[in-house]
Length: 118
Image (cartoon, rainbow, N blue to C red; front, top):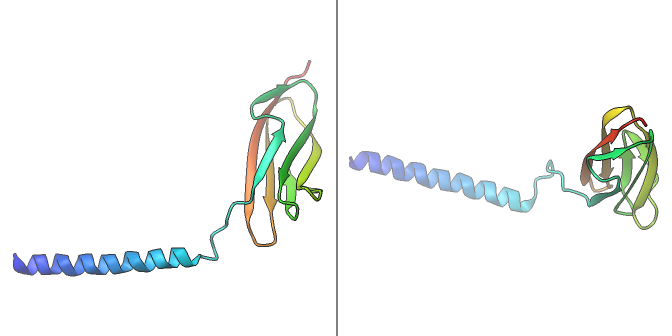
């Protein structure tokens, strides 16, 4: 029984050492991790129903960010604001907005907008 307790003790010590290494690595920052960039879509609201095919998408992020809406790059002004028009298909539409900066930080928002033909 003493032998099993000793083995268990060694295992716990080794496990603790492994966790400590993992924690210090996390604190130091793993370059493969991506931080979130601030990204807000102000128009349209998620799960909105609209009655026209052309939809204005507006939002805000960092001034130096690169923004794309549905894969198309959109201009960002000096305040970080952006806007563009997307054309919807009848029924539910997923609209993806992505932002990234030169440090590699990224953010994305996916909205559902329902186009109901009049």
